[in-house]
Length: 426
Image 1: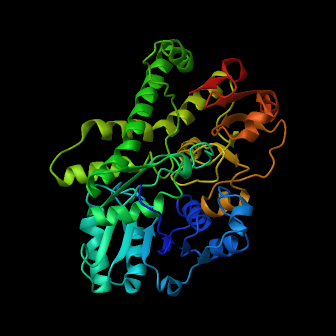
Image 2: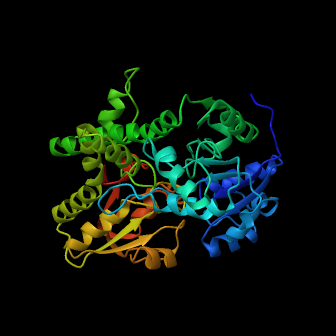
């Protein structure tokens, strides 16, 4: 392991789920750190000691020596730049490298000979050297590879998961040469207690990251397809999986909605690159198609159950509990709960959403859905527990069922209440 060199002045671009914990950790270990985000209101929250996403404790934010800023002028004299911005997809499901290129344009004027640029964002193999390198060179007048040192260290953040924090998960590092890799190691070694894995090349590290979530996406797609088949057979999918799980090597994946900024997005980065190379990836895209239709499947299954109980569909009121892409976090990026709302609207169903992690203003302002602060008892024709937030688990199936009218359908997508606790499970 390299001897930690705290002489670097480090800039972290992007203070979200990835960048903020890294910024705070580096500052805690004695580095001089500038955390930059273009969203001024978020920076104001951080300066007041609050993480807008609720992932980093207030005491850690308030007590951090890091400089939180939205002014690129504060990047002056930084020697290392870590890019931790989102990498979304376009409506055509192709990579949107706009945030990455925007970050490159921001830091380029502040690069000096020997500056280190580390990309953490998930990309397809080749982006760091073939896209970022030229962009940084064009904006700085320096040569990428000799005067600008390039590296890649993919994030492995799991929002809402305190156990698998940045410090507790092995981190991959890669660079253009051994000297730069040693320098990268000196930055990350003090904060990543689980250790570092030195990849042989930047493209190897990029590929490793993009297949992590692609593999998970495909495994979930497989059990989602099981669920579609078993629904037609009248079988309870979770009971089937429980029985199959008694075999020692059966993988414990469960059906569900696949959203978020990683699993539902990263496969498209790999398929895009594959198609550039003349290869059409059949399996990966098939998995994506299955996972993308699950929201509509949930809505259609609910409609059938309502009709079976002679509940009028047109104008019916349905309560959806949870809107984030996963439990116990405030992240709504690429949430597939939106697909349920959209499909229900096509049946003239009135859907109301309650999510204690998001709030009514965000639901209605950012997502254009009808949000409610507190559902009223005896109001709804059907209820969907879409996200397994701890608040809903604590509330319990009986209290949630009481929010519905007599005979209302309770659809527990995640199966958090067991077979007896709901009418439907995915």
